[in-house]
Image (cartoon, rainbow, N blue to C red; front, side, top):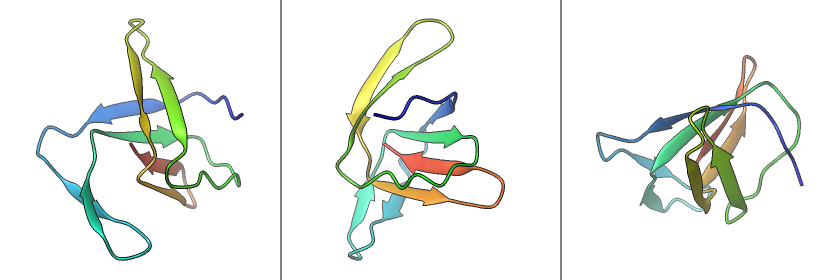
Length: 74
């Protein structure tokens, strides 16, 4: 289990992301995290708690570890 600080942005524009197998899927949130080397596999269940206490549950559609942050589409 990985617990990390993050920022979740709602997908208000009905955006999509391409999975590694080439499938195009819609996601609900983009979750930005500090840089880490942990790979979060597609299909992993996640729970995000906002600063206001709202709980968001979903599954990872895609995850990337970039130079400045890590990002998951949930």
